[in-house]
Each structure stands twice: as C-alpha cells, then as structure tokens.
Image (cartoon, rainbow, N blue to C red; front, top):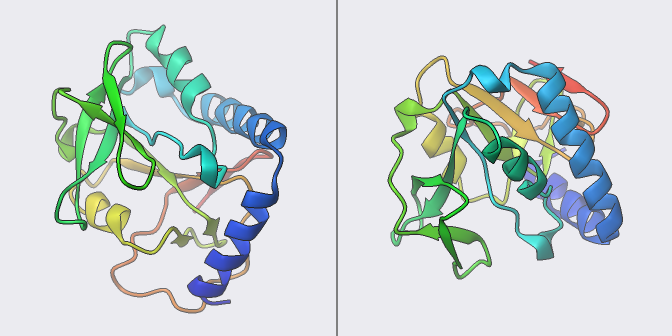
Length: 189
C-alpha cells in the first residue's frame, strides 16, 4: 500500500476513535515503553506533545511520570519558520507552552537541546510497516531531524495500531525505526 493511502486510512481510523479509547491505548503505550526500554538510564528523551484534535497518543501522563524522576530529561520539537526543520527544547514542569499554527503546543523561552544529546526519540506516526518504515503527516520533519541525531540514538515509533504490510513507496530519505510501541507490544526492527 502507498503512503498516501495509508495516511488517509490511518487518519480516518484514528479520528473515529473515542477519546476514552485514545487514553486507554496511550496508557498501554507507556507501559510498553517502561517494560521494553531502560528509560531511567537515558539522560535525554525526545518526545512529542500531542495534537488532541488529531487523536494523537497522549504523552502527558508519561511526561508527568518522568518529571518525578531525575532522568531522563525531556526535549520536545518546535517547527521553525522555514516550515521544514525542527529545533528542540527542554521541557520542564515550568516550561510555558504556546500552540503553533497547527495546534501543536511548543515551549516558549526554554533552553535548546542539540539532537546529538538525545538517547532516544519517541516518534509520532500514522502507520508503520513490519520493517520499521513509517508514515507520518508527510512533511519529512522527523526524517530530517533523525539524521542529526547520534548513530546510537534509539528511534522509537509510537502507534495506536499494529504494523501494516510493507509500504510500497519507501524512498531513500526515509529513516527507519529501531522499534515501535503499540498498545499490545514493542515491535523491534
């Protein structure tokens, strides 16, 4: 199946989910993360702040849990004015947030975090195949960002659904995942 078809179908399925179902699946995702990875050993974890109207996995319960621990420190992305790149900023309980034009909460006045500092990145996606290739919103933000990270930075997808059969139109610039969290299990690629 092509990325465009997967994107359209996955968005429709996700938008049809009741909020309670999104919350339940999100909680299961964070249980999978904690069971499958040495989260407390990471110095920096990059994650995304959810867009509620898109029914994205809710990262806020995970964020609150991690703030109660000394490690990892948290970083979140900010879309840059060029509309193609991301910069990354420290997220703390005191960080002020403002929604960008897509409704994505972004930190204001926070310290910048270099991609090379990150031990793991949680990547939002719409679909992932059994080889770790993902379908996002189609802007390529994460593909560009992931090439700036260290070679050993874990690339972990976050999906409300299980992987799909192989994506037909994977291209050379796609950066595959090392693993993907689903509510049922951790997939490793």
